[in-house]
Every structure is written in structure tokens, then in C-alpha cells.
Image 1 (cartoon, one colour):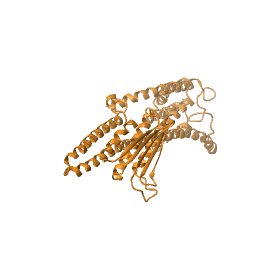
Image 2 (image 1 turned 120 degrees about the horizontal axis):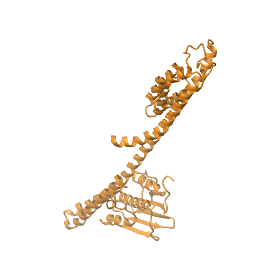
Image 3 (image 1 turned 90 degrees about the vertical axis):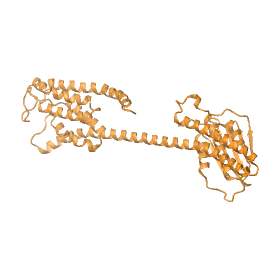
Image 4 (image 1 turned 90 degrees about the horizontal axis):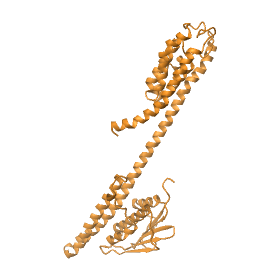
Length: 405
């Protein structure tokens, strides 16, 4: 995102933040001014009990001297989430100045604690710890009531609640930041997982399109080379098949990549429909071109399938035929498609030789087919047949479950 786009996205967040914090800062300021005018701190009118070393001034004079300090604390509350360091520093200095003027009050403490929470929620502990070093001394100077003077044990006992009060915003802010960082890491992990899955899906689509077409092209090129010297006129059909297969592969690959680049914004004319079971005949014809026998059988009444199921079934047949072309020489094959009440099944078998290993290692092709079937709620079985050859069978529900349901 460019700088202008970032600023435009940032403005609404700033507005929402100020809409909450500005009234809160005003409330803190109004309450602090009221406390400095109308809440006496000691008997007989003076704001401080005698003997504490602070000036004995009238309440009105104290309030007048403390106005800038109260404004600093209120301003810190207003800007605490936009400028956490500066807001805390300004509110701490304002609270200290109010104390020096004899106008310390609970509303100022609340404002200072709010800016402390914002500071610890925005920064890691190593960053906010030096800023909060004088928080306890400032709170200890606020006149919450009569305190014992000259009795160290009683003074220490009176200080413990103040320390606890200072720890509350520190702990809450640290916890809030930890939760926010945890949520951010989860979002990043989810994004990485989504990107990986999308790349895997693109790779699988490209593999299916290019792999099958290259296998057919290789097969046809072998036929053309075999007859080129002795019967050159028979090489022409193979060359035509190579030309048509490569053209179809390029068009399908271009359409596939266009969908992945911009599935929502691509013009409708550039989004060719994904191939489905209606296109299996073209696959069979391409493999049949060099004399390899491939029988296609359809059982049941063809039904309109969900696009995801239709494409997954087509890709599994495509990959299975590609494996047959690559690994079985000139063996024939059979493709069966069955439409039943609640599911559709596809089965691809070849007539290759019997295998000595009862459970051969599963390659990436079969693993990819199994992932395709599982992605739309289906299941896939693949393995050698006792009489020879290899069978791949996949079954899909007509109404696949919704992803994430």
C-alpha cells in the first residue's frame, strides 16, 4: 500500500480513537478541577495537613496554579493511544506539577493510570520500564488521606497499596499487548498457510494441465519419429496432434492462471469454464490417437454436478491417463463414469502387467489425486489389480460440504 492509501486507512482509526479518548480526557480534567476547588484535604480549610512541608494556600489559589498541570494530564489522556510515550510523560509531569501546587487528587491519578496503561499496551516492557520508574513516587505523593509520619513500618505499610495501584495498569497493559501480539501472529500464520495452500493449488493445476499435454506430445513425437523415415506421410497426423495438443494446453494454462491472478476482477470473456466430465471424451481421444485403446463407459443418468466436483473428477481422470501414458507402454485402459443417487464415481484402469509389489509406494501423482478428492468431500483408492494393471477409483458426493462449515 502506498503512503496515500495508508494515510487514508489510518484516518478512520484516528477518528474513532479520539472520539473515545477526548471525552474521557475532558471528564478527567473537569473532575480534577472540581476536586481542586471543592474537596478540602485537611481540617480548618488548608488543603494539606500541617507538618508535610507543602505550602498552606487557599483552595482557589491552588486551583489557579494547578490549571496548566490539570490540562496536561487531561491532554495526555486524550492522546494516550496516538502518542503513548509523550502522553505518559506529559501526564506524569502534570501530575507532579499539580502535587507541587497542592492540587493532587484522585482524578489526576486516574488520568495518570490511563496513560500508563496505554504506554504498556503499546510498547514492550524493555521500552516502557524506564518511563514508569517514577510512577510510584508520584502516586505516593498524592494526598489520599492522613498518613503516618515518622513511623517507617507504618509508612511502608501505607506504601504497599500505592505500589499495587501502580502495578495494575502495568499488568493490564502488558496482558493486552500480549493478547494483541498473539492475535497478530495467528493472523500472519493463517495468511502464510493460505498463501502456501494457494501456491499448492496453482502448482497442482499447472501440473495437471502441462503434465498431461506433455505426455501426449511426447507420445505423438515418438510415433512421428518412428515413421518419419519409412512412412513420412503417416507422421503428419502425429504432428497435427502435437500442434493441437500444445495449442489446447496453452489456452487452458492461460485461462487457469488468469483465474488465479484475479478470480473476481477478470473479465467474464477471459474466464474460460473449468473442464469437467463432459470434456473427458477429448482426453480419451488424445490418448487414443497413437492406437492405444481407451474405452469410455458412462453409467446412470448424467447429472449437473457442482463445479468443484466436476473439475476434481476431470483432473483425476486426466492425471490417471497421464500415468498410464507414462508408465504402461502400449497397454489399453478403461474409463468408467457412474452417476448414482447421491454420488458420482470415476474409475480408471489399465491393462498393464501384474506387479510383484502388493503395496507400491505412493507417488506425488496419487497423493495429488487424493487431495483433490478430499477437498470436495470425496475419497480415492488406488492400487494394483490381482489380474494385472492398476486401478484408480474416486467417489464424490453430489452435494459436497461447504469449506469451513
